[in-house]
Length: 264
Image 1 (cartoon, rainbow, N blue to C red):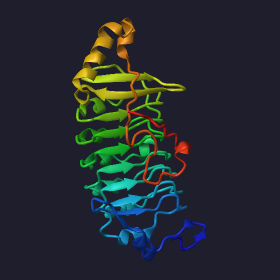
Image 2: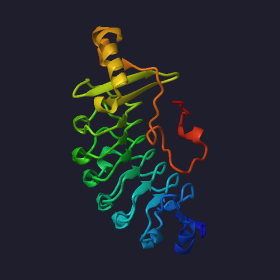
Image 3: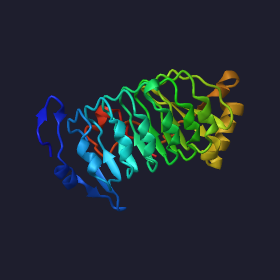
Image 4: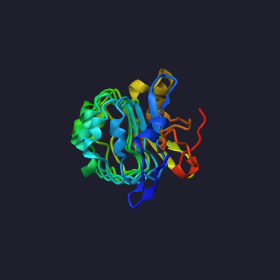
């Protein structure tokens, strides 16, 4: 597929890009360009006017073009494991995007666009393994979000508006210097797993009756008493698809990306 390498890394022709497009079982047009050595976003992609899914993960991209928002047909965008420090404001033009993965980059809080909150179709947003300590307040408008990855960042506390987004199904905040109080229907599930400790935020309305009852019992009686009520120990293994690590369709050397195999 590569046309050749130079100072700007691997190059891609429009002809080769078109040949690489595959149709998914549900009829979407997917282009996988993972681990291709791209240092610059391929300009020829802007000529693909009917692309639904784009995977540019595990490349060497340091920045995204300002006209990224021109790829308006995208529903799924994977940019994990690059060298990005920011996301352009024009990403808000991708109004139909449901899945965005920018995990394992170098993105700072200043590099997150305020326009992120205008992408109201987002169902999965993976911001893990970056340099974030706060989120744009506009994200409170993402009421349809089902998965939010914030693991391996610099959060000292959970952003207040996250609690207000009651439609969240799963929030992964493990390996952050996070400290926050339980409340507003949020339960902190602390799991003692060797060699490290995993921590997730689970909303009451996302728990079945049995699990919710057990959480309440642990807090009220068997949770250790006193300050122990702030944490609920749960020895069951829960999976968080898309939020455990970069996790794209390009499954190359998964152990290197800290993906832990879990059984239900």
